[in-house]
Image 1 (cartoon, rainbow, N blue to C red):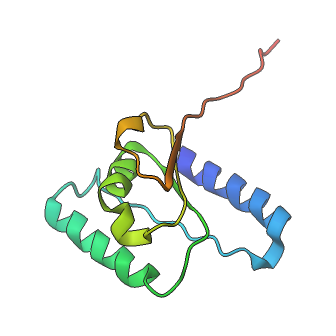
Image 2: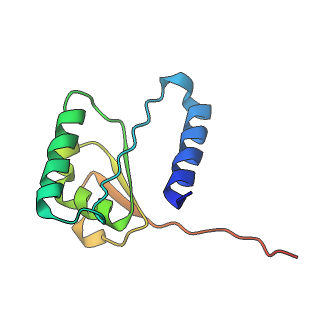
Length: 112
């Protein structure tokens, strides 16, 4: 399984434990590495605008360089002033007032 799946599942479990059934957890995959064309990107943006135009998000978490670039370029169009956290990026100079950037790493223990 890809790392994104494990990360999504652990986030879903932790947030569900805290918020229970009141939590609505949506996951999108930009899939730009398979479809790098600008036409695909424009259609993906249109799809996200359509899907999320009628609901207000409390928070948007963004993982991965391609998705981070997409959010920096189109985030205000998609989610207006919704708080956004970009994970694993170094885009400090490009951030908007509602966007926070953070990096993450792995904790490991020596195997004896």
